[in-house]
Length: 624
Image (tube, rainbow, N blue to C red; front, top):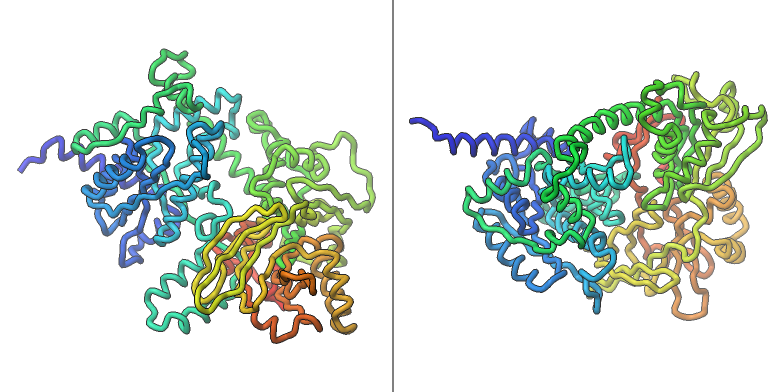
């Protein structure tokens, strides 16, 4: 029997969508599909706004074989205008008729706030929307979030970027896949949670939950890993194509009239220009597509050079106990970049990107200002020095991007005097005289602080984020009395089981703590502790260490330090007995990092890919 042309078109559309969807999957999910290592399909969350784009996405996902993916729809009620709740419920009904399980998530705006009257409404709404979507993915055990951004959205982003004066690698486009920066600091959503997700799955399979899971919580985990990844399979689909797909299926959708108001947002203005005005040839979609294509080629060259040059730098050690990175940089960047490529992007900005990749390992900042790192590049690389560097062993220190840079003399001919020899390194390009030590800049007021209430045996209480400005948010405790994982100071993921009758604080170690320890510790213990600090956290670095202290409600021995978790050490004293410190358990992991050099690989998929050796490239509380 002949197959009708409409059936063939439908099958072609579905095949094209399936291929695009597969391309946007993270590497592990792609491997599971190709190798068929899973007994179940890849679970994905579909962000459905109710508009025609997201309805088309839900429709095509519903048509795919369940042995390939298992889609769940997430609908956000943004509460930004009247009738949003009714629209969300109508969308839920439509999606369920397609055969998808659907959940409505409601944004919670502060009391008295009129969302659409906020000057930065679009930015705030986007952040809240992604955070609630990411949180739902975490609770459902899903690590792929699909959104319906399409080719027209890509054109709008391009014209907005051109209007802002960007070009080359700085030209902003929508990526087909990636992490969700709006969810920074959310455990299990942004670059974290892979191990706990595995533990959660083990719980579901275990009849004796507590006894089965607790030993697994003691895994030798140093670095956090994993995240919810956003995937955008529609970037090669035009909006008109999506409209035809939905109309052909006779499925309705919601229209947000505010999207047609050109004055409301920058994106609305760009959309209005592209759809309703006869633009110059250079700003039409075909030209913008060519611009994106050229930008993609430039970006590929940029990325290849970036990784090649970065990997020529020599990572000597990363001590996660104090967050100290020791690295020998290359002398210059320009010899590795051809003249034509130097004309495509700023050499100084390229150098700043190299430095940023190392700064991110130790900084507490969510984002790093590249401009400040361009200034740092003048000191680090010889390309930007107006006069030749004098032959001296002078130390240099400065701060940039929330990081303290400290240069020390360490001759390449005899580096083992200070830092230990790392064999088999291509050293001809390296700085022959100096090593850079990067550490977290001393914290400003108010210092980062987490407060953990005592664990009630009857009812689990909350973990509370506080600062000295009294800003408060509340987070639910996990099972077995553990507080929720929280990102402390942008570097350490920490959770605590507080079995004492006092509230506990996680805050920076302070000079006053050393004064108190000198008065409450034995001479032998104090000498050992101070010698250990000099080795692990010299100078002012020690004042960036996380410390767990007692938050007393009275004036008797307040703020007494009981543990330094990144050192893996409890602190007993005459005031806080050994029995009391045993009632406090803590788990700590360093944030996800991606470092690679000719001698070291630190991958963001966790501790299994760390190359251990006599050189102790990674030093942690597990080395003790």
